[in-house]
Amino acid sequence: MTLKKGSDCNRVNHNMSNELPELRNLLLEGIRLSQQGSYQRRAPAQKARPYLISARDRLQQFVTDNPRDVEGWRLLSQAQECLLAYRDAISSLEKSLLVAGTGDRRDLRRLALLRQAADEWSQFPLTLRQIENLGQFLLSNGAHEEPQGRSMRWTKQWLIDNHHQDPTEVINAFSKRGAYTDFQVFHNVVHG
Image (cartoon, rainbow, N blue to C red; front, side, top):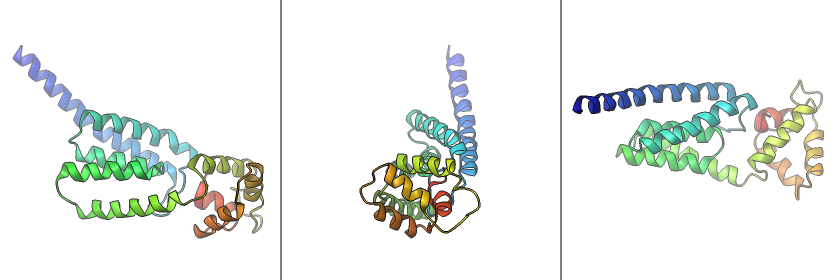
């Protein structure tokens, strides 16, 4: 019986050691497809969302089952960040630091950047759902293709159609992110 128990433990450890690299690869594929930079994040490309969501959900289960796994918490934080869930990303990275018992310099720097991004996005006048909807609207109207002019015609139209309280506030927020035309709004912020 002891032998069987031992082999069950080895099988669990073996499965756990194989699972994290698989989850890391899933997350990396989502990041690659997201077409996001490390700074000035925007909504991930639509084709990346299934990978990122799956990685996030599976990593959440992984850290629930393995709460002392530092790398699991780090990867979960990264998946949450890619999905613009900054508060969750901060919490997961803090748990990673707590479990590690030391403050890795890179993790502390990343934590500061996550807090800054969370503050910036919390002040953004559109929700993530609204950003995604705007992205789909711009895509359906061809704003993602070569820029035809220097206007925000479709962005303004979407704001009017969706009865946004202060379109000027949204236009100014896009400008702060380097988006002065529909094409730039699509590629610099919403990315469909």
